[in-house]
Every structure is written in structure tokens, then in C-alpha cells.
Image (tube, rainbow, N blue to C red; front, side):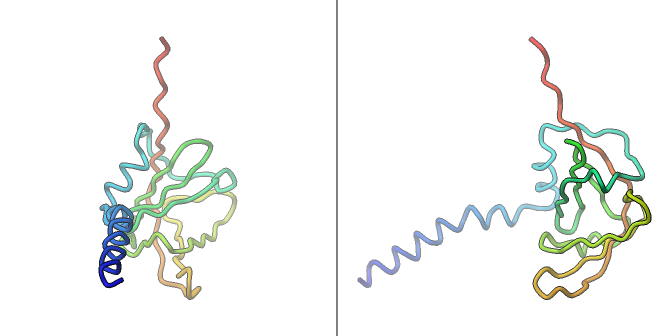
Amino acid sequence: MPKLIPSLILGAAIAVAPASAIARDTPEVQLARLLEGRVAGQPTDCISLTSARSSHVIPGKAIVYEVGGRLYVNEPRSGASSLRDDDLLVTRTIGSQLCRLDSVNLVDRTARFPRGFVTLGQFVPYSKVKAEAR
């Protein structure tokens, strides 16, 4: 039994290692992985919130919105360093668009307590690269 415990601990450590390696990726690496196979388009000042299917936070770096098959990357003008991937994003807009200079409030998911806000920059669209016809 005493020999079994170190083996179990070692096995658990090996099983957790890949997950912790992923968590240690830099924000730049996380963003590059998310944008793999996509090409950047011309930056735009606004996106349609009614068409946005999801959002993804790159901690300390950016918010990525999925709109109609495109990914729009927004690197906030201020407050980006306070972005965490477990934050709830709360937006208050006038109309149906989310635009440059709008603010997004950050709320702690567990405590439901406001943590701060970011001021949005331009939205850079990334589209999938079309495969060449043979």
C-alpha cells in the first residue's frame, strides 16, 4: 500500500501536466491558436451585437467576438491587463452595435462583484482562408 500512494500521486501529476501547460500559454500564443487558419481584414469601429454568437476573453490581452463565421479581435484601448478568462462581460449599448470607445464592465463570475471595465478599441475581423480549388 505505501508503494501504491507515490505511484498514484505520480499518475495524477502526469495527467494534470498537459492541462497546466495549456494554462501557462502566453496571451499571444492563445490568440494565435484561436486565429490559426484565418487572415486579418480591415479594422472596423463597430460590430453588430445581435449577430454576435459568442465572446472569448484572452486574459490580459483581448476579447474575441464571433459574428457570422468571422472572429473579431478587440484589443481594448484601456484596461486590457485586467481581463480574465472567467470574467462575465457586461455591455450597455445604445442601439444594436458594440463600438470602439464603448466600455465593457468586468464582473467576477463567482462573487458576482464588479471588477472594473475596459474601453474597446477597433475590431479586427479574421476570416477563414479559402481552400484553393483543384
